[in-house]
Amino acid sequence: MAAIKFGPQLKELRILLCQTSKSSQGVRDFIKQQYVPLKRSNPQFPVLIRECSDTEPVLYARYELGVEHRVSLQNLKSEEILKCIQELATSKPK
Image 1 (cartoon, rainbow, N blue to C red):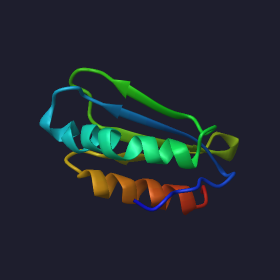
Image 2: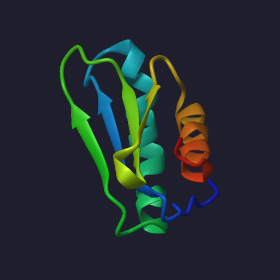
Image 3: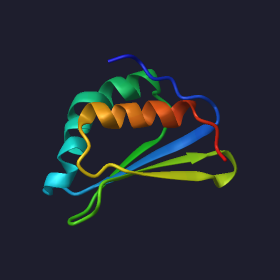
């Protein structure tokens, strides 16, 4: 995995998922495979992970001035989630 460095415009990532649902399997795989390298690249950056039964897997990216982007992670694979995070890390908030 290539290291992702978050720019100063991105302030926080929040990942919501279900512990058991099939639609959250890719998110669970992402956490197992990609979370540690992501945190090593950005040790002070807040990445919040919230598990709750029957929750749709979602990624929230918070930018400067409280601007947020929401991305559904339903049925995505670990690699697709990483690509979403890379896009959010390089995009400018609108």
